[in-house]
Image 1 (cartoon, rainbow, N blue to C red):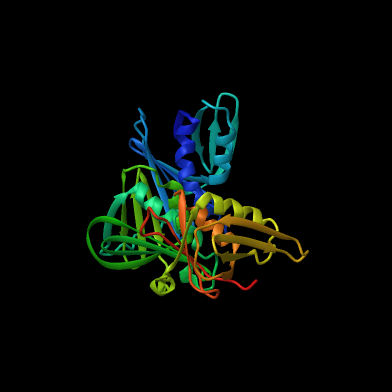
Image 2: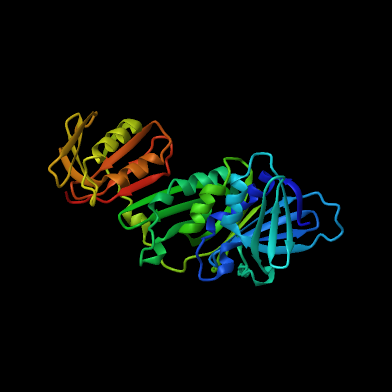
Length: 369
């Protein structure tokens, strides 16, 4: 018996840790499977898509003499079965030939398995790796604060991820899709030589989901080929993107026109204006005049929305257009009450910062409306 009368959550929880990178339809059928290995007093779950590999381990109590066993099973199918079973169900899993038999008191399932020896593990390419350690909460905060600016399937492949810069006692993170850019940084332990890696989009998204809001440490090891992140019994290995990231420092402007406003107030005004914006271009105009900000949108049916926000602005009038989704992405990922909007001229980008976080920067390029 591979697993004998275990709580369903005992199996479901580690399965959900690794399942995020598993796709149902794969060119290689085994990539739809999760590798499950029993070794002495622990069970290990592993999934891979050949670019990323996630492994997590749980401790078990066993009286069996034969404690070494392994198989691969359809990850999504197993997840759905476990998820839909009643709470407190006791699960037993037995493997016979090329089948896994999953039993509870009232249910029986027989799923196909593929040999564990055929599972394509990622080779360790961490040659002479560099290493940093920081609290999980801090790493998660950094990644979440920039990940929405990553490109998706851009031909400029180096934009499909997050740039990590380790320099001195700082970890900096940058993401851009060419239309907007997000930057953040934090102090870490140690004094490190400058190193840069581009972590792929999928690895970043999984880390944002899996990292905990805890002061427990996450350890990052990286070399020119791979990055590995270890935390809370989870091991994520990913290839890194080989490419030259744009010079982000040139993109972040320095302005003298600053406007501090209630983040939620602007966010809600943008949400309302977005309803009548052009569905394809999603443009809104910012019309900034003495003590007033007008947010204006219109669409091809000649419908229009206008929101007025009272401000303490005293500079020259500015009329500038932006993609409303980009603005809302930035504001949705700020947790502070106030946000600072900095402007140049009508052809310049907007810079969004917060009074509390001196490092965070979010830049959105203007658009013609």
